[in-house]
Image 1: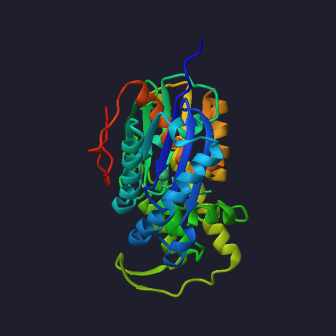
Image 2: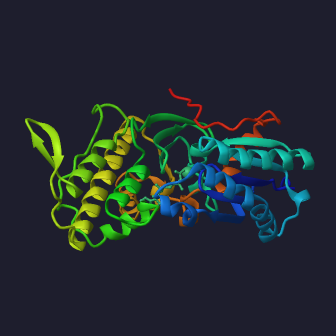
Image 3: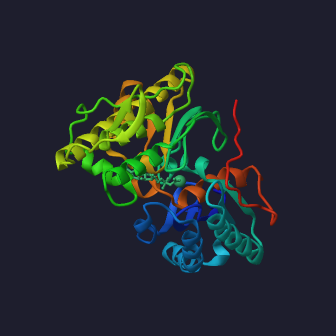
Length: 353
Ligand code: KG4
Ligand code: ZN
């Protein structure tokens, strides 16, 4: 007889999405409810932490109810409650963590605090066949850009990270410079489709050739100067000269050239990581994994190196709770559960090698 399926409720409130999901055995997604706050933050061109926490508070209960009802589940069907408890905006995380604690306590079920960045690596495993380990992982989001090595399920070790901006952050800032709506990532992606990726020779910042770290701040500054060229005197920036007219074509060319440079940097470091840690599987996650050029380039890389590439479905690329519930399954199986002292944390607790 096969063992009883394990039903986990996931909760995610680390930034500007209030999300809840029901996932069976870490893989089968029964529901995936996401209430996005983009419209609230869009006039500010970025997430306003106080507004985010307030919106999470208003939405968390209806979102939880909907996750249960669309899964056709009742509270008593749940075997565990998992919550993304770090990293993120502390006020936002606290809403999810408090809800998870209240549910775990009242239902008398185990509570699991899950690292949000590591959960992104699980996104490509949802509603998909099992993978072989070791695996290499790439997380590309608005707050993080990191490479991971996973010798076994659910045990990622970070082997590279950005030393300044995350790639999604660079996308969002370029979106602001180009006058696009927030969040800029998907807008830059769309605009880039009509531009010439070779129109601007933006820098490919590769901090130390042998390191697996990333840097995107130089690229972002180069885009700033393409939009508003600075005047220089003896090498120092003294005034800003009037920008050349920002035609639709120039805007699209900047978007396409920026995107080409950003994706090239990601692919080069990923190539280096694969040379150093040959693995049959490549897990990719985070909002930028929705990017059209990145997806095409990753597919080509996977074919070239015969990799089992796990690119998440679109609904699992952005912040969601299915990845939280999915990532919790291995932890629960290993008995690595938390108690009601579980704390929310703004930063990751990094395991490196
Ligand atoms: O993973 P995520 O939802 O939140 C964080 O954990 O940060 O990622 C959000 C980021 C934003 O920076 C957004 O602009 C970016 O993902 N993003 C994209 C695309 N879709 C979302 N960036 C580039 N191309 C896209 N198609
Ligand atoms: Zn995320």
